[in-house]
Length: 192
Image 1 (cartoon, rainbow, N blue to C red):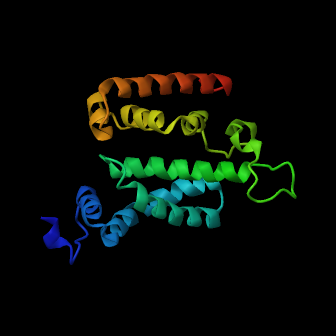
Image 2 (cartoon, rainbow, N blue to C red; image 1 turned 120 degrees about the vertical axis):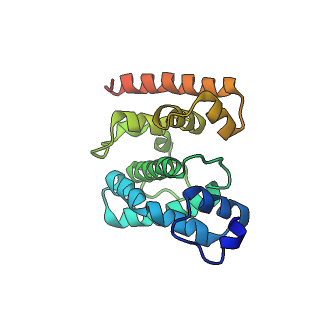
C-alpha cells in the first residue's frame, strides 16, 4: 500500500507507515517527516540535559544522523518512546564527554585518558537529571532497553523478546540484572 503513497506523503500517515517506508526503501523523506513530528520533544530533552541552545541544536542534528543508521538495526514498536531513549542517551553521552578533564593539557589528541571511564557521578551533574536517569544511562544497552520497554512502555517479556528476536530467559536476565545494577547505583549515589 505504501508504494502508491510514496510520491506524495500525506501528513496523516502514521508513525508505523513512515517507519516501514524508510526501512523498506531508505526514503529520507519519510524518515525526515517522522523525525520532524518529534523534533520539539528531542530538542526539549537536549536542552534539559545540555543546558545550552547551541549544543542542543547540534545534538538534534546529530541524533537525526544517528537515527538514519540505528532505525534499521532495531525492531521499533513505539517510535516516540524509542526516539526519546535514543535522544536522552545521546545527550547524556555528550554531557559526559564535556565533563572529562584530561590531566595533561599538552597530550596528543588521540591519547586515551583514563578518567574517560570514570563514572559520571564524579562530576557535578546538570540539574533536572534524576539519580534514576543517571543510573539508567550507566546500564548496558540491552539492560537499559529491556527495562525501558518493560517498566516505561508496559511491554511484556514476550513482546520484548519478539522485538529483540531474543529468548524469554535472556530478556528476564537483562531485566533482573538491570534492576540489580540500578539498585546498586541508586544506593551508591544516595537515591532510593
